[in-house]
Length: 174
Image 1 (tube, rainbow, N blue to C red):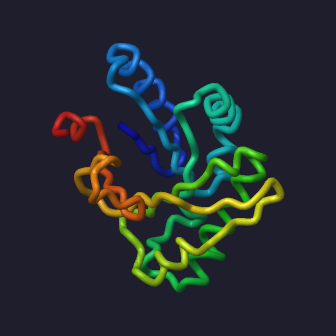
Image 2: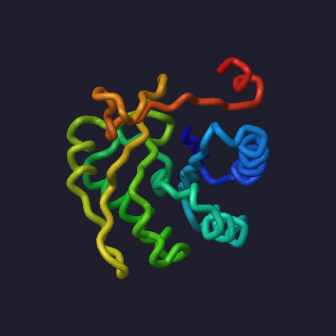
């Protein structure tokens, strides 16, 4: 199971503790956590030490891009998407993560809306040239839906489905 927490706000920090308690009670369940941060200056400005500490201590957690301005990718030009959203997001995350930026290979689409085919191709071909080395996006969380098993032949790493839960009452439905 992989859980994503979007937007980098206070609820992410609180949810991490909930996930850890759940995994303590259910150790066979497995765990993987992706923190999808948009506007790293905001998130790290408020929770920077907690985020850095959590990330450095947990080998089952990672960061993902969620774009700089949280705009739907299917409404942007290729230049706006790559240079205005993804490149800026990588640059800011690198300031906080340093060489750990090389682990950031996942993009979570804002509003759970997959990009157009043209933008998706641009994302697949994009490389961020950090001062620590090159990074490529290898996974994309796109539309809502029931997630496929990554071992399934139909699994598509360029449109990993997400179940979206806005509050605790919706969690009981899953």
